[in-house]
Image 1 (cartoon, helix red, strand yellow):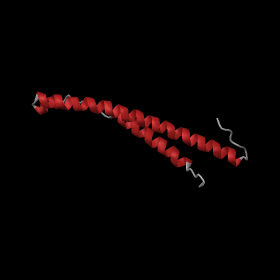
Image 2 (cartoon, rainbow, N blue to C red; image 1 turned 90 degrees about the horizontal axis):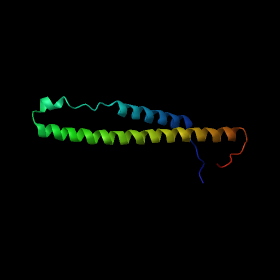
Image 3 (cartoon, rainbow, N blue to C red; image 1 turned 180 degrees about the vertical axis):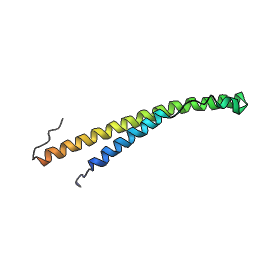
Image 4 (tube, rainbow, N blue to C red; image 1 turned 120 degrees about the horizontal axis):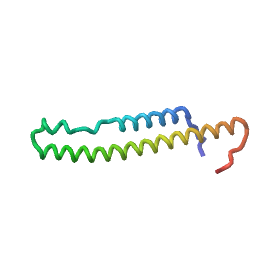
Length: 96
C-alpha cells in the first residue's frame, strides 16, 4: 500500500475557497422584474421568470452542496492534522 501524503494547508485552502464560492452564490441577485418592461412580451417575461425561479432553486441546491463540501474538507483537514499531531508525538491513534 502506498503511503498517504496529505497537504493539510491545501485541504484547508480548498475548504475556504468552497465556502467563499458558496457565499458568492448566496449574494447573486435574483431580481429580474426590470426585464418585463424591456422585453415587451408577457410570454417572454413569464418564460424568463420561470427560468429565474428554476435557477434560484438550482443555485440554492448548489450553494448547499458547496457548504457540505467545505465542511467535509474542513473536517478532513482537522482529522489529518490530528493524526499528524499524534504521529509526531509518538502516540497511537485509536479508531473512533
